[in-house]
Length: 307
Image (cartoon, rainbow, N blue to C red):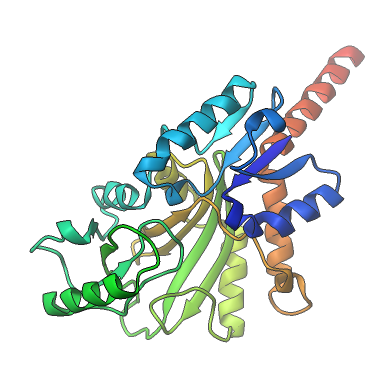
Protein backbone atom coordinates (compact mmCIF):
# COMPACT_ATOMS: atom_id res chain seq x y z
CA UNK A 1 0.00 0.00 0.00
CA UNK A 2 1.09 3.57 -0.65
CA UNK A 3 0.64 6.27 2.00
CA UNK A 4 0.95 9.96 1.17
CA UNK A 5 1.77 11.84 4.41
CA UNK A 6 1.26 15.60 4.59
CA UNK A 7 1.08 18.29 7.21
CA UNK A 8 -2.45 18.39 8.66
CA UNK A 9 -3.28 21.73 7.03
CA UNK A 10 -2.26 20.56 3.55
CA UNK A 11 -4.09 17.28 2.99
CA UNK A 12 -6.23 18.96 0.31
CA UNK A 13 -3.47 18.57 -2.28
CA UNK A 14 -3.99 14.81 -2.58
CA UNK A 15 -7.63 14.39 -1.50
CA UNK A 16 -9.03 14.10 -5.02
CA UNK A 17 -6.21 11.85 -6.22
CA UNK A 18 -6.57 9.39 -3.35
CA UNK A 19 -10.37 9.36 -3.65
CA UNK A 20 -10.18 8.44 -7.34
CA UNK A 21 -7.51 5.79 -6.79
CA UNK A 22 -9.41 4.14 -3.92
CA UNK A 23 -12.58 4.02 -6.05
CA UNK A 24 -10.56 2.11 -8.65
CA UNK A 25 -9.44 -0.41 -6.07
CA UNK A 26 -5.86 0.83 -5.76
CA UNK A 27 -4.39 0.44 -2.27
CA UNK A 28 -3.48 4.00 -1.36
CA UNK A 29 -4.10 6.17 1.68
CA UNK A 30 -3.75 9.77 2.83
CA UNK A 31 -2.27 10.41 6.28
CA UNK A 32 -0.88 13.42 8.08
CA UNK A 33 2.04 13.84 10.45
CA UNK A 34 -0.30 13.93 13.45
CA UNK A 35 -0.91 10.21 12.89
CA UNK A 36 1.85 7.95 14.29
CA UNK A 37 3.34 5.56 11.69
CA UNK A 38 2.47 2.58 13.90
CA UNK A 39 -1.19 3.33 13.15
CA UNK A 40 -0.89 2.68 9.40
CA UNK A 41 2.54 1.34 8.37
CA UNK A 42 2.82 -2.31 7.35
CA UNK A 43 5.81 -4.22 5.98
CA UNK A 44 6.29 -3.71 2.22
CA UNK A 45 4.25 -0.48 2.23
CA UNK A 46 5.59 2.70 0.62
CA UNK A 47 5.40 5.93 2.63
CA UNK A 48 5.74 9.19 0.70
CA UNK A 49 6.72 12.05 2.99
CA UNK A 50 5.28 15.29 1.62
CA UNK A 51 5.83 18.92 2.68
CA UNK A 52 9.48 18.27 3.56
CA UNK A 53 10.48 21.78 2.46
CA UNK A 54 7.98 23.25 4.92
CA UNK A 55 9.89 21.88 7.92
CA UNK A 56 12.14 24.43 9.56
CA UNK A 57 15.54 23.47 10.90
CA UNK A 58 14.19 23.12 14.43
CA UNK A 59 11.53 20.65 13.22
CA UNK A 60 13.73 18.45 11.05
CA UNK A 61 14.67 16.12 13.91
CA UNK A 62 10.98 15.44 14.44
CA UNK A 63 10.57 14.60 10.75
CA UNK A 64 13.64 12.35 10.86
CA UNK A 65 12.21 10.46 13.85
CA UNK A 66 8.97 10.03 11.92
CA UNK A 67 10.88 8.56 8.97
CA UNK A 68 12.79 6.18 11.25
CA UNK A 69 9.52 4.92 12.77
CA UNK A 70 8.23 4.24 9.25
CA UNK A 71 11.40 2.34 8.38
CA UNK A 72 11.17 0.35 11.63
CA UNK A 73 7.78 -0.91 10.45
CA UNK A 74 9.40 -2.30 7.29
CA UNK A 75 8.24 0.36 4.85
CA UNK A 76 10.04 2.07 1.99
CA UNK A 77 10.32 5.81 2.70
CA UNK A 78 10.36 8.30 -0.17
CA UNK A 79 11.59 11.87 0.38
CA UNK A 80 13.62 10.78 3.38
CA UNK A 81 14.72 13.88 5.34
CA UNK A 82 18.28 12.54 5.43
CA UNK A 83 18.46 13.31 1.70
CA UNK A 84 15.69 15.69 0.70
CA UNK A 85 16.87 19.30 0.51
CA UNK A 86 14.98 22.35 1.74
CA UNK A 87 14.24 25.24 -0.62
CA UNK A 88 17.32 27.44 -0.23
CA UNK A 89 19.77 24.55 -0.23
CA UNK A 90 18.04 23.07 -3.26
CA UNK A 91 18.17 26.35 -5.20
CA UNK A 92 21.86 26.89 -4.50
CA UNK A 93 22.79 23.27 -5.13
CA UNK A 94 21.23 23.48 -8.58
CA UNK A 95 22.76 26.94 -9.14
CA UNK A 96 26.21 25.42 -8.67
CA UNK A 97 25.38 23.18 -11.64
CA UNK A 98 24.36 26.11 -13.87
CA UNK A 99 20.66 26.36 -13.04
CA UNK A 100 20.77 30.14 -13.48
CA UNK A 101 19.82 31.78 -10.18
CA UNK A 102 20.70 31.84 -6.49
CA UNK A 103 18.93 32.59 -3.20
CA UNK A 104 19.90 33.93 0.23
CA UNK A 105 18.25 34.75 3.51
CA UNK A 106 17.73 38.49 3.83
CA UNK A 107 20.54 38.90 6.36
CA UNK A 108 23.00 37.17 4.01
CA UNK A 109 22.04 39.09 0.84
CA UNK A 110 25.39 39.74 -0.91
CA UNK A 111 26.63 42.74 -2.83
CA UNK A 112 27.24 40.68 -5.98
CA UNK A 113 23.63 39.52 -6.38
CA UNK A 114 22.24 39.90 -9.89
CA UNK A 115 19.21 42.19 -10.15
CA UNK A 116 16.29 42.02 -10.43
CA UNK A 117 15.40 39.93 -7.39
CA UNK A 118 12.25 39.19 -5.41
CA UNK A 119 11.31 38.09 -1.90
CA UNK A 120 9.55 34.89 -0.98
CA UNK A 121 8.83 32.82 2.11
CA UNK A 122 11.41 30.07 2.48
CA UNK A 123 8.96 27.47 3.76
CA UNK A 124 5.63 28.07 2.03
CA UNK A 125 4.21 27.83 -1.49
CA UNK A 126 2.52 31.21 -1.57
CA UNK A 127 4.70 32.42 -4.45
CA UNK A 128 6.72 35.65 -4.58
CA UNK A 129 6.02 38.14 -1.80
CA UNK A 130 6.98 41.09 -4.01
CA UNK A 131 7.15 42.19 -7.58
CA UNK A 132 10.61 42.36 -9.14
CA UNK A 133 13.06 44.57 -7.26
CA UNK A 134 15.73 46.32 -9.33
CA UNK A 135 18.00 47.97 -6.76
CA UNK A 136 19.26 47.59 -3.18
CA UNK A 137 17.03 50.43 -1.99
CA UNK A 138 13.95 48.63 -3.26
CA UNK A 139 15.06 45.46 -1.50
CA UNK A 140 15.50 47.34 1.79
CA UNK A 141 12.03 48.90 1.49
CA UNK A 142 10.48 45.55 0.62
CA UNK A 143 12.13 43.91 3.63
CA UNK A 144 10.72 46.58 5.94
CA UNK A 145 7.25 46.03 4.51
CA UNK A 146 7.66 42.25 4.77
CA UNK A 147 8.68 42.56 8.41
CA UNK A 148 5.55 44.59 9.17
CA UNK A 149 3.14 42.23 7.41
CA UNK A 150 4.70 38.77 7.75
CA UNK A 151 2.58 35.94 9.06
CA UNK A 152 5.39 33.61 10.11
CA UNK A 153 8.69 33.74 11.93
CA UNK A 154 12.01 33.92 10.17
CA UNK A 155 13.52 35.83 7.31
CA UNK A 156 12.33 35.75 3.72
CA UNK A 157 14.51 34.53 0.91
CA UNK A 158 15.93 36.96 -1.62
CA UNK A 159 15.91 35.18 -4.97
CA UNK A 160 17.49 36.17 -8.26
CA UNK A 161 15.08 36.47 -11.18
CA UNK A 162 15.89 34.72 -14.45
CA UNK A 163 14.11 35.72 -17.66
CA UNK A 164 13.33 32.59 -19.62
CA UNK A 165 11.50 34.23 -22.54
CA UNK A 166 12.76 33.60 -26.03
CA UNK A 167 13.96 36.62 -28.00
CA UNK A 168 10.96 38.57 -29.23
CA UNK A 169 8.48 36.60 -27.10
CA UNK A 170 6.36 38.58 -24.62
CA UNK A 171 5.19 35.46 -22.77
CA UNK A 172 6.77 33.25 -20.14
CA UNK A 173 6.37 29.49 -20.07
CA UNK A 174 6.47 26.89 -17.32
CA UNK A 175 6.62 23.13 -17.55
CA UNK A 176 5.39 20.91 -14.74
CA UNK A 177 6.51 17.31 -14.30
CA UNK A 178 5.89 14.85 -11.49
CA UNK A 179 8.76 12.71 -10.28
CA UNK A 180 7.78 9.43 -8.66
CA UNK A 181 10.57 7.18 -7.40
CA UNK A 182 12.62 7.43 -10.59
CA UNK A 183 9.80 7.95 -13.10
CA UNK A 184 9.08 11.34 -14.71
CA UNK A 185 5.42 12.03 -15.56
CA UNK A 186 4.80 15.23 -17.56
CA UNK A 187 1.92 17.28 -16.17
CA UNK A 188 1.50 20.60 -18.01
CA UNK A 189 2.96 23.35 -20.16
CA UNK A 190 1.59 26.80 -19.39
CA UNK A 191 2.11 30.15 -21.12
CA UNK A 192 1.42 33.54 -19.51
CA UNK A 193 2.43 37.18 -19.81
CA UNK A 194 3.18 37.58 -16.10
CA UNK A 195 6.50 36.19 -14.88
CA UNK A 196 4.77 34.16 -12.16
CA UNK A 197 3.11 31.41 -14.19
CA UNK A 198 0.61 29.69 -11.90
CA UNK A 199 -2.07 28.95 -14.47
CA UNK A 200 -2.12 29.61 -18.21
CA UNK A 201 -3.56 32.67 -19.87
CA UNK A 202 -6.24 31.84 -22.42
CA UNK A 203 -4.78 28.91 -24.36
CA UNK A 204 -4.64 29.01 -28.13
CA UNK A 205 -4.79 25.91 -30.32
CA UNK A 206 -1.02 26.15 -30.75
CA UNK A 207 -0.54 26.31 -26.96
CA UNK A 208 -2.68 23.21 -26.44
CA UNK A 209 -0.89 21.41 -29.25
CA UNK A 210 2.49 22.23 -27.66
CA UNK A 211 1.25 20.98 -24.27
CA UNK A 212 -0.08 17.73 -25.74
CA UNK A 213 3.22 17.17 -27.53
CA UNK A 214 5.05 17.66 -24.24
CA UNK A 215 2.85 15.11 -22.49
CA UNK A 216 3.37 12.70 -25.35
CA UNK A 217 7.12 13.11 -25.81
CA UNK A 218 8.11 13.89 -22.19
CA UNK A 219 10.78 16.37 -23.19
CA UNK A 220 13.54 16.94 -20.63
CA UNK A 221 12.71 13.83 -18.58
CA UNK A 222 16.39 13.00 -18.03
CA UNK A 223 17.19 16.53 -16.81
CA UNK A 224 14.19 16.55 -14.47
CA UNK A 225 15.18 13.18 -12.99
CA UNK A 226 18.77 14.31 -12.53
CA UNK A 227 17.68 17.48 -10.68
CA UNK A 228 15.54 15.41 -8.31
CA UNK A 229 18.28 12.88 -7.65
CA UNK A 230 20.78 15.66 -7.01
CA UNK A 231 18.46 17.21 -4.43
CA UNK A 232 17.43 13.96 -2.72
CA UNK A 233 13.81 14.18 -3.87
CA UNK A 234 11.92 10.95 -4.63
CA UNK A 235 8.46 12.46 -5.13
CA UNK A 236 7.23 15.90 -6.09
CA UNK A 237 6.37 18.23 -8.95
CA UNK A 238 9.22 19.98 -10.70
CA UNK A 239 8.40 23.43 -12.09
CA UNK A 240 10.85 24.45 -14.79
CA UNK A 241 11.46 26.23 -18.08
CA UNK A 242 13.56 25.21 -21.04
CA UNK A 243 16.39 27.17 -22.61
CA UNK A 244 16.83 27.33 -26.37
CA UNK A 245 19.72 24.83 -26.13
CA UNK A 246 17.44 22.22 -24.53
CA UNK A 247 18.75 22.57 -20.97
CA UNK A 248 16.30 23.42 -18.19
CA UNK A 249 16.00 25.95 -15.37
CA UNK A 250 14.33 24.45 -12.31
CA UNK A 251 12.31 26.96 -10.30
CA UNK A 252 11.29 24.64 -7.49
CA UNK A 253 10.46 21.08 -6.54
CA UNK A 254 7.22 20.93 -4.56
CA UNK A 255 6.97 17.77 -2.45
CA UNK A 256 3.27 18.31 -1.73
CA UNK A 257 1.84 19.51 -5.03
CA UNK A 258 -1.84 19.69 -5.86
CA UNK A 259 -2.07 16.79 -8.29
CA UNK A 260 -5.16 18.11 -10.06
CA UNK A 261 -8.37 20.04 -9.44
CA UNK A 262 -11.91 18.78 -9.92
CA UNK A 263 -12.48 21.25 -12.76
CA UNK A 264 -9.54 19.76 -14.65
CA UNK A 265 -11.78 16.77 -15.45
CA UNK A 266 -14.68 18.88 -16.72
CA UNK A 267 -15.48 18.70 -20.40
CA UNK A 268 -13.25 21.11 -22.27
CA UNK A 269 -9.86 21.48 -23.89
CA UNK A 270 -7.91 20.46 -20.77
CA UNK A 271 -9.92 17.33 -19.97
CA UNK A 272 -7.87 15.17 -22.35
CA UNK A 273 -4.62 16.54 -20.91
CA UNK A 274 -5.71 15.69 -17.36
CA UNK A 275 -7.01 12.21 -18.24
CA UNK A 276 -3.75 11.34 -20.03
CA UNK A 277 -1.71 12.59 -17.09
CA UNK A 278 -3.82 10.63 -14.59
CA UNK A 279 -3.31 7.38 -16.49
CA UNK A 280 0.44 7.97 -16.64
CA UNK A 281 0.56 8.91 -12.95
CA UNK A 282 -1.17 5.67 -11.98
CA UNK A 283 1.40 3.69 -13.95
CA UNK A 284 4.19 5.47 -12.07
CA UNK A 285 2.98 4.38 -8.62
CA UNK A 286 5.50 2.08 -6.92
CA UNK A 287 3.03 -0.73 -6.38
CA UNK A 288 1.78 -0.42 -9.95
CA UNK A 289 5.29 -1.08 -11.20
CA UNK A 290 5.65 -3.91 -8.65
CA UNK A 291 2.41 -5.45 -9.84
CA UNK A 292 3.57 -5.19 -13.45
CA UNK A 293 6.81 -6.92 -12.48
CA UNK A 294 4.92 -9.68 -10.69
CA UNK A 295 2.68 -10.15 -13.72
CA UNK A 296 5.72 -10.38 -15.99
CA UNK A 297 7.27 -12.98 -13.66
CA UNK A 298 4.08 -15.02 -13.66
CA UNK A 299 3.93 -14.88 -17.45
CA UNK A 300 7.57 -15.94 -17.66
CA UNK A 301 6.92 -18.87 -15.29
CA UNK A 302 3.96 -20.00 -17.38
CA UNK A 303 6.02 -19.76 -20.56
CA UNK A 304 8.79 -21.86 -19.01
CA UNK A 305 6.25 -24.41 -17.78
CA UNK A 306 4.81 -24.78 -21.30
CA UNK A 307 8.29 -25.34 -22.66
